[in-house]
Image (cartoon, rainbow over all chains, first blue to last red; front, side, top):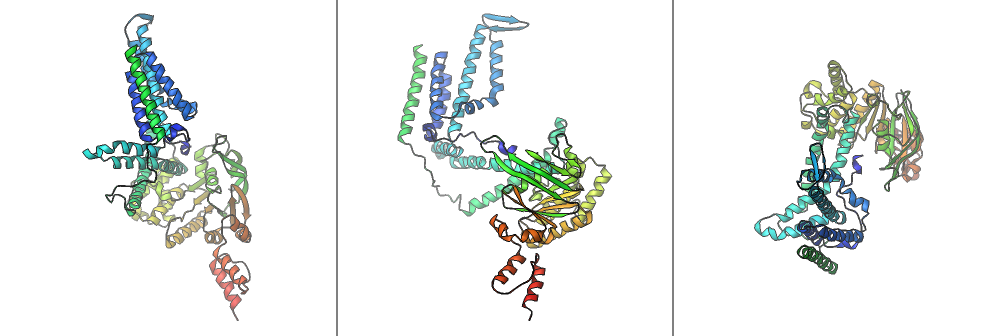
Length: 266
Length: 283
């Protein structure tokens, strides 16, 4: 059923990683992604992989959950592998029909494959260990220096928070409307592509109307509690940079140092 | 045509951590031409039962006979089920989507694969049955109508499929008292004119006491009572224990009795109560 779709992919936990400052986690994830592009050989990936393993172990997120993150991008990875495998010229390893696989091709394909997998696993760890609301708070805090040049950081973060908050509501609404139309004999599962697209109209129109109604109610509720009165907002949970965050930052720095050293020394 | 439900069980997400038993060994029969009421606290399994009756959900075990056909059998035609049972959801006006009222009401009959003339005739009939003027509203956008009118149009959309069993989930929720009465009167009229089985879900005990021939009570997924309104509401203390109430008429006469004014009988409607009280206090 549609209601079973879990949103975001937050895995609830109380681990050290879970409790880190979201700002630190966002920055660390960005640095990790950059580090993957600094790496030039498999030795560097070994360091990156070990670091990721360590974070996974500390976070206590089950491996099945983490690997699930790869599923939606499986096609992209497979495509990258194939293109690299067949398109790179060099010393021919195997040749059949019009295609050839070269030593350099295999190397590049493996290299790109590892980079993509690490990249996706690294960034999905961020969303697995951080509540969506904390994530938006973190983004807001990181963007706030840009307020000076007119970037509406708070408004952007609020939009993201609201969007996240209402996705389950809209899913529930969709489920209800689908069932109501099915009760009137609507059929969403059979027929040609065109027929099926047309069958979506009875869902989409009521869904849009519901979305606007919900938005209007929400706007009214926010306004009646003086949202947008121009004063800065206070929070129930302030983000604080604690001692463990300092430790986290130091660990991240040492990881970066290792990656850079590896690249210079080898 | 009758509804016969036998040992119905429904479990949501079986085998998963958030497994939830919604219905447990529910069995009952609703005879042809009955106006049945279904009551129960929030989360008692009412909406699961409605969706099972309409084939929107498949039960974990048990069977549902509508007439002679067991609709829980695999391979049963959904369209056939929908032709027999019409389900009006809560706040049905949120399912309106067409440009005009006539087109929206025609959606159901068209899905049944009827001929255009038949569809047209049914749309006229259904709009008249819900108490709207066909010529006045046929070309209007459903979104320009008032709340009560929208709800009538939405109900017409289900009635136009000519179900032999009409199931309504709180059809008066969120309406003002006048529209509330009008919708209930309309449901009664449809019941009398089409001689269908009507299954009304409501939190309003007064409505159930007044309209139903048979009352089904669900609590925590189990069917705890099944009988005439007189039988069911005589067990008022039990009803209150599971978060339901007595109809006002019984509540008032009960309170009078406790304060020393002996009122005979157990009235279900306020009119009956008024007569009995008048008799009791007459010199």
